[in-house]
Amino acid sequence: MRPLRVLLAALALVPVLLLPATPAAARDGKLDLQVAGDGATGVTIRASYADGHQLETVVRLVLTATDGDGDTVGPIQLEPSGEGQGFYTTGPILSPGRWQVTVTAPAPNPAEAVATVEAKAEQTAPRPVPSNPIALPKGSGLSTGVWWLIGGALLLAAAGSAVLLARNRNS
Image (cartoon, rainbow, N blue to C red; front, top):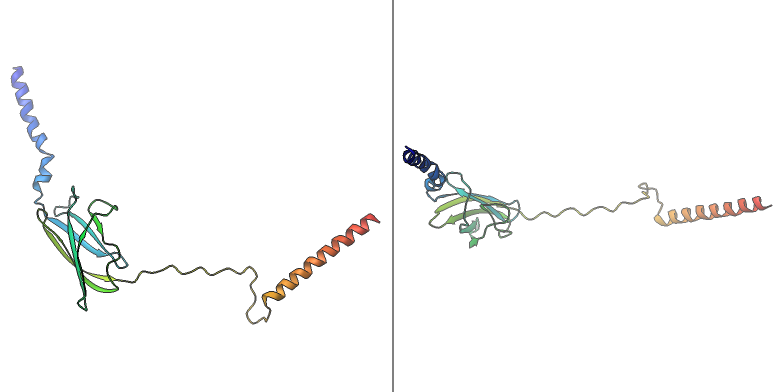
């Protein structure tokens, strides 16, 4: 009776052992590529299996792009970005304008995606406006030099008052 239980337990484990292999076996190797602009002059690509699972290995992607004037960029072989599994970025490769971008992946993971990307010139942060601790009213005609004279006069007056107070106390 004991050998029969062992055999039945072993047979019951066979489907459980095959479960981890099922999703990989179900994948046909095709990829889903999502192509978009990065907000400036680069392109971002998100690659996953067609069934929605994340990539388990590095795949080679090739990008080509054409603008409305017939200018082309590529083919460029892309390397994975450090920003996440299945995420690829090009960096600044396009000039400002509208581009038709094609990304392909060779066998054993065949895929192709075409997207229109609007490349824009990189924006720079505005320079900070220096603050003026003494704001002069517009049209007052007072220059900064006048304010220095007024401040110096106040300091002399304060020093003179201190000297007079010291003399009065000593007398």
